[in-house]
Amino acid sequence: MASCDLAVIGAGPAGMAAATLAAEHGLDVVVYDENPAPGGQIYRAIETVSLARNSDLAFLGESYRAGAALARAFRASPARFMPGTTVWLVQKDRAIGILRDGKAAMVQANRIIIATGALERPVPVPGWTLPGVMTVGAAQGLLKSAAMAPSSPVVLAGKGPLLFQLAAQYVAAGVAIAAILETGARPIAALPHVWPAWRSGTIGKGLALLRAIRQGGVNIIRNVVALEAEGRGRLEAVAYRTVRGTGRIATPLLLLHEGVIANAQLTKAIPLAHEWNERQQCWQPMLDADGNSDVEGIAVAGDAGGIGGAEAAAHSGRLVALAALKALGKIGRIAHEALAETERTAWQRHLAARPFLDALYPPPDASAQLADGTLVCRCEEVTAGQIREAVSLGCAGPNQAKSFTRAGMGPCQGRMCGLTVAALIARETGQSMSEVGHYRIRPPIKPLTVGELAALE
Ligand SMILES: Cc1cc2nc3c(=O)[nH]c(=O)nc-3n(C[C@H](O)[C@H](O)[C@H](O)COP(=O)(O)OP(=O)(O)OC[C@H]3O[C@@H](n4cnc5c(N)ncnc54)[C@H](O)[C@@H]3O)c2cc1C
Image 1 (cartoon, rainbow, N blue to C red):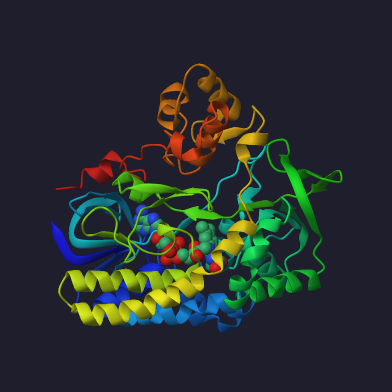
Image 2: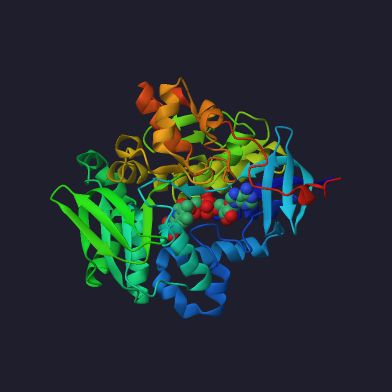
């Protein structure tokens, strides 16, 4: 079995920063990412865009440009990068199952840093499985990696920084936006957190995005309380309701977004100990101040450990790498303390804006309004009504819901429906989300064929 000092899973800002630092200090570092190039979500395709067509950086914005330096330093470091490699298993003894070029293999690492980032929060609405309905993140991925943008006026619906960022990028790229349907009201609860967010520069960035969107003449419809994607066979229109009335916009493309959550599939499959984050309404691994989990030698960096944004992710990656360097004897305790203090201070500075953003864009309570006929598990085609019915028959939690309905048993392993199914059960049984719990995630966390598995020694 191949081996290494440190395996880093994910080459976003957290993984790139961690691997660069650890490899520069002499560790044998291997980095796995299922994408073909480093960058992660925010800096997707940063090398191709920044090297080949420098002018394209203009419409993707300043925060995207920042990733080029991180990727250059990562490529210049001695870290070994394995792109196009999916990690489907991590064991507590730090054996890692990878899939590359159609072949599965096992690797033994002395230490592991999990930097698998975030997922967009899946929030079902009626008609969300129609062709023509996508997420904002998926559309932004196409814009960054293939310069693909919609040719007809598009509707963006939901809330959060990423939604407004894509809208500003579309305006700069000359893409027509039929409307932005902003869900929910701007809560007063965000007010006490304004000052730290202002000092961190987050509010300034947000206002600049809104200004750019307004200058592009985009119609922003606020306080949307219900949405429905309509169409026969594919999306034809978006119907919405606000506190003032109803409306309908004809469009072939609807982009949904309700914020991001920690990608806990791998950390839950190991399993590491997790806790429910009430503010961000998602599960996240329980970590110490250096990013170490409850399993010896396995640490978590970046958004996979809790949503903090790209800059925070890079600092958290370096912080976790420093802990690995200390544990493997590459730096002493005093050097570690000094370097870690600098990273921790910078990390905390970037995290300071989070309470404001979390309070400003709270996730919708999907379980409250979800109509019985709306699909919640897309893989197994299970509706909200079937989950409610299972609860009325005695189903007590998400794992039992698998047996009752097959929800969560498809190829996405509950990534898309996990939180919604738990929220429905919580509402029907009067329990809290942490009491209801989450699906037990089992490896392989990504689909593998028998042929791919057969390549294992
Ligand atoms: C769709 C999407 C788009 C986003 N776009 C922006 C944006 O434009 N601007 C912004 O400020 N923030 C954006 N965010 C938030 C942003 O992801 C983070 O703040 C930041 O990128 C976090 O960095 P990270 O290194 O923790 O994770 P990421 O950048 O998400 O990197 C994680 C990496 O891990 C890899 N990975 C995950 N699972 C596996 C596996 N099992 N095997 C192998 N590789 C794996 C992924 O391919 C990815 O490259 C986005 C989030 C999402 C979900």
